Length: 356
Ligand SMILES: [Zn+2]
Image 1: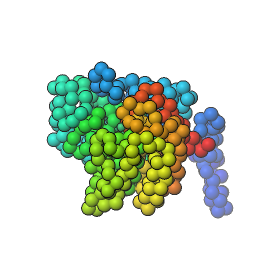
Image 2 (image 1 turned 30 degrees about the vertical axis):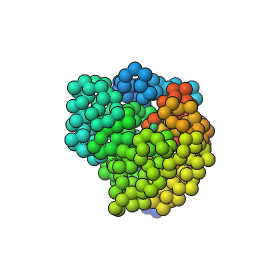
Image 3 (image 1 turned 90 degrees about the vertical axis):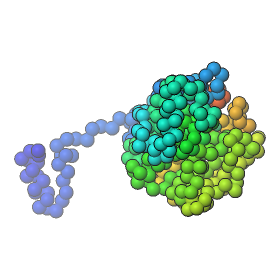
Image 4 (image 1 turned 180 degrees about the vertical axis):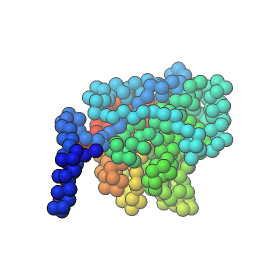
């Protein structure tokens, strides 16, 4: 309640046609700490429980991948600049926005029964894989909430298992749930971000993501990937169907491709497509197996190339989607390369969100 004196002052000001802020009158503004810049900033989703998805000895998609990312972010001095994003388990309803109920039931059953591999494809699992997968997906949805509400500018989600090979009805390629697709649908339904653009720079084609949105004109899917290579999809003539015709863009490149080809494709193909599509949100399937030296790919991107790609995405997000960009980890299997590549990527996200 305003004091009588403040009330009288307000009445006098109102009478004089002026505007007086009572709160400012009674409670001085707290002093800003220059070391703590105002939100929004960059979020980081990192939850150790995602390491509990165990894939067996010598499997490239191993829990240590998350340690490698975390250690590199720490070494680069990025951890203290990042706002933590909490993980949570995605609900059945959220999962069913993308995945068929029958597939979710069978995957859950396979895992509960102690199978070592999903019966739908080449995804190794352990008893805690379902929980880890739901935490990864749900955490990403929390990142969507924060970016959509403006409490975060952008975010990097260091999660596993990865997601972009999982289609509506099939887990495969180390993936159980399609994290990036779940994020796109959630953003559309919960936050009315009607149009979502997904870029995928993983060395492998994001066949699951493509499949989910192939006939959907509200999601633009763009992928650079090695070809011929696993999983065998992603030809340049796969461009969508029905209402989604033209909203899928594939840029396959031969082994050995690097900065020139991939940055070139993002600049020459993705940028104009985004300008035309006018998304409300940009999502990135950030697979760092397109880095030189990855055991599961033969592309030659360097850490500074991931920085350049990130800058380009940030500028597209800024121009078309109010800066909203959320990146989710996909592949990246050279433990010595994954960390520095992710750190180069996150450095650019932080630079953009801090206004530096
Ligand atoms: Zn990959």
